[in-house]
Length: 138
Image 1 (spheres, rainbow, N blue to C red):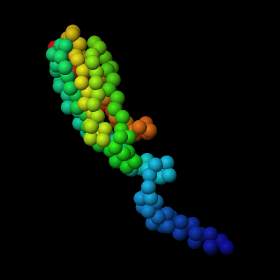
Image 2 (image 1 turned 60 degrees about the vertical axis):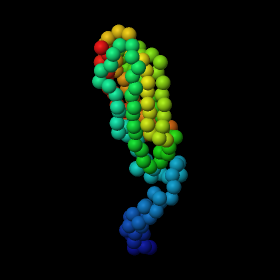
Image 3 (image 1 turned 45 degrees about the horizontal axis):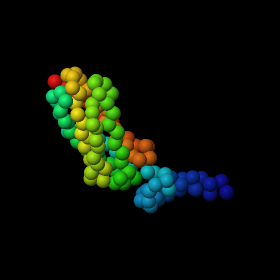
């Protein structure tokens, strides 16, 4: 009996390694315990001005890439001002399955520096990426 148990223990690792790729390919969601191993989201570009005039319209375009269990439409963007005079008329437009976000706003009437945090995340909030940047208002 003891030798049969040792054989089963030695066999379990190779069998698990052989079956693991098939389990990973079986599907997703909560039924897939391996989803966290290959699911990701990342900001890949932020097109923005380094400087802008006072009281002018500014457009910022950000693009994300994702993989694994994140589908089109499962992506949310957050654009928060972290410092400086308040901006006005902030709008957000999403495209490309929510992989691209364009933020438009009006710069303050006074010169200074305005800083922002841009965050992209999956709708379940498990996966996220963020970046910060500043614009000099002159």
